[in-house]
Length: 247
Image 1 (cartoon, rainbow, N blue to C red):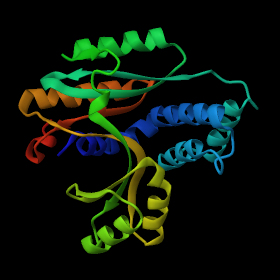
Image 2 (cartoon, rainbow, N blue to C red):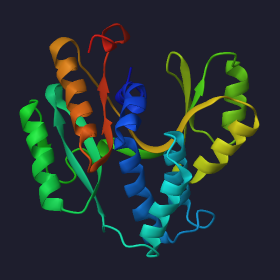
Image 3 (cartoon, one colour):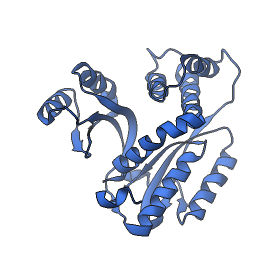
Image 4 (spheres, helix red, strand yellow):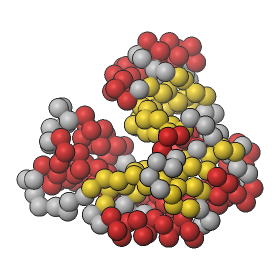
């Protein structure tokens, strides 16, 4: 199971717990604030903001909290100023790690992230050391239950999808970022059950890890994801299905 799907599945399993702690809401609020600051507070004309609001709704973030974040970003309310960054590094076993960051203090965040890498046997690298291994993609995940494979393939390809990947219980439909919105709308209109939909980074190649190394990799990506300044963790690990639950 490749990293972009294995980690996504792990992340979704812990999403409910994160939401209860408020961590998921905090990250969504940051994304909304930055999107509104950079492109304005209207999601109809600011697609980045629309995607950020959709992500917030997916973790049941209250409407008034979403609205407040939009107003902070657009300047209607006072709020913290965040800036974006990308950090890169390696997990045990040579697994590539790419982090999307939103922070109000780059020095603090860099120090915290480096400490996490060091503690769990990874290495934080220089800019560009692994980013070339990842491509920006839109990804829509469809539940397999009561879903016909041919129907998914036909609808996805007609809507501009590049690939449909079998992920066990789900189909992962990949597309270019510019086709993401229309692909998602087409699949929803066709009546498919959408498990998740997001703009992400998909690895061009993967690294297989097993046993203790796999456990360390999963521990590292989970610990990085726990950091408030880390918005998303992208990785190219491949863990055999039989070991994923153990890892």
